[in-house]
Length: 211
Image 1 (tube, rainbow, N blue to C red):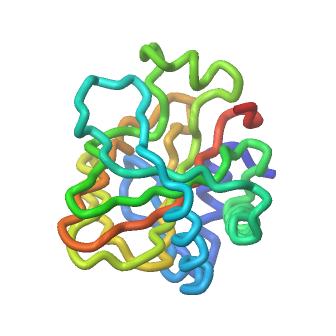
Image 2: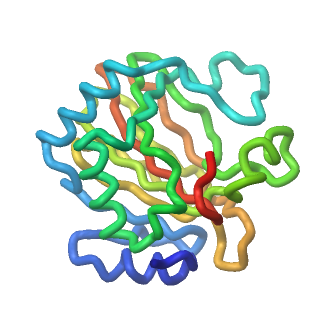
């Protein structure tokens, strides 16, 4: 199994259906129609059934920083197992390093203001979240539905914006090849202006997951 950022990027770039986003600042990839409509529908139903208010690390006190809802998806569910297998086959990352799959739901007006998926070294919550498993290395996010308006994911430092598209995978490296964090992956889950947005997210860690 792969763990080095360059090796994972090379594996992803070699996949025939995946596209690397041109940028020297981060390794960002996308693949359209990664999950089927039927699988996406199953995952949306699970998110609706188990959603709760989302939380954040290093809380700034801004009650509107992250207004989405989150669902922790149980590993024994068949739909979850199918996604886990697909991501392992795609990335080659040892699944032991993966956090449990998580779903997010954004209703109209909800967003996640600009943030990084890695935990800031030296931040107030760094030890709490990283003492056992290390920091996050890669993010794999899948849009489960089309959104009538809004809900894009914007990487300001990369000058790239990705629109929600049912079944589309978007992934990026939170860690640089030298082991440092990749600040260029700062991204904004922009407000949904019309409709509802559903995504699932898989994060990988430096060490085996011991959550």
